[in-house]
Length: 70
Image 1 (cartoon, one colour):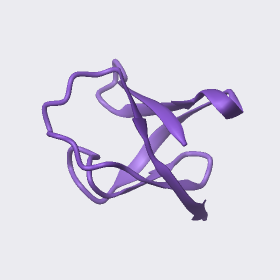
Image 2: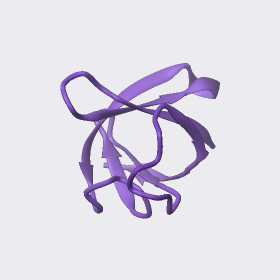
Image 3: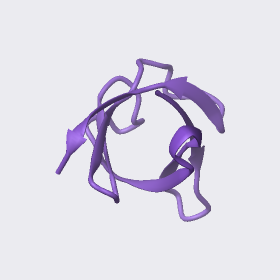
């Protein structure tokens, strides 16, 4: 699914899913830069993020895969 990742003022990251009109914060990530691993959202979703460079400019729209709910 297509998701837009942006950096929050607080220093964390959030994801917007246009098809679901859903905005959620990333609460944990396998990788420090969130790219190339699994991330957990505050709504319980787990997404597999694509492998991108750590210095990728945000906001950016990427293809992520939903793995399931907590």
